[in-house]
Length: 386
Image 1 (tube, rainbow, N blue to C red):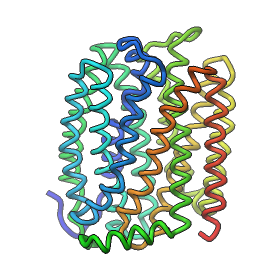
Image 2: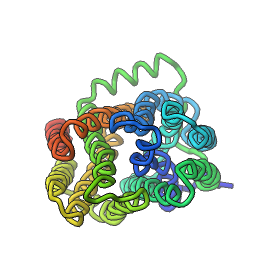
Image 3: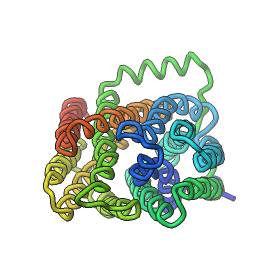
C-alpha cells in the first residue's frame, strides 16, 4: 500500500499515462479493417474514434467537479476499474453503431484518469519537480498512444479486431492495481463540494484569458493530430501502399520519437517561455505535415514523425500553462482544458473524414496545417502576459 507523506514516482506517473492512453487511440490502426467489415466510409468509421473524443470532451468538466469534491486519487482508481466494462462491450459488439456506443462509454471514463491525475500532480508534487512530473506523464501518454495503435494492429493480424479490446480490458485492470499501489494518499487536497463554490470557480476560470487561450490551443493541436492519423491509415491501406493493420500500426512507431524528444526538449524549450516552445513545436509540425504530400513512404513517415513530435511538445507546454494559470479548483480547470482538447478531436474525426472522401490526402493536409498554425497564433496572443 502507498505510504502518506511521499510523492509518486515519475515512473508510476508515466506508466499510468501509458495505460490510460492505450484506450484512447487503439482502434485507429483498425479503421481500414472496420471499414471493410462494416462497409462504412471514412467519416462513418472515423466515428469509432470520434465517439470517444466527444465523450471525453463532454465528461471532462464534470469529472473535474467530481475530482475536486471526492479527491483525485479516488477518481483515478474508480475510472480505471470501470474502464474494463466498455472494453468488454466493444469486444463483443456485432455492429458499428454498437461499437461506437461502447467507445463512447470508454470516453466518459477516460477523463477520470487524465483530469484527476494532472491535478494530483499539480498539488501533490513539489513545485521544483512539477514540470518534470508533468513531462513524464505526457511522455507516458505518448507511449500509450503508440502502443495502443501498434498492439491493436498486431492483435488484429493474429486474432482479429475483437482481441484488441480484450487487451484494453486487461490494461485497465493493470492501471487500477498500479494506481492503488503507486499513488500516495493526498496531502494538499481540500474538497470543494459547495455548488456555489463550483460556479464561482467556473466563472473565475472563464474570465482567465491565459486559460481560455490554452483551451483554444488544445482544441487545435488535437484536431491536427487526430485529423492526420485517422485519415493516414486509410491512405496507407489503399494503393499503392496497401499496408495491412499490423503494418499501419507499426507506422505509429513515430510516437516513440515523442517519448525521447518530449522529456529532453520540453524543459529546454520551457526555459525560453511557453510562446517560444509553442512556436517551435508548431513550426516542426507544419513542416512535417507538408512533407507528407510527397509520394515515397519513407518521406511520409518522416513528415508524420515531425508533425507528431510538434504536437507532443505543444501538449506539454499547454498542460503546464493550465497549471500556471490557475490557483484553485485545478481539476475543474483541467476539465475545461480537456473539454476543448478532445472537442477538437471529435470535430476532426468528422471533418477530416469528409475532407479525405472529397479530396484525398491533398485535401486533408491544408486542413491540419492550418489548424496547427492557428494554435501557434492563439498561444502567442493568449500567453502574452504569461
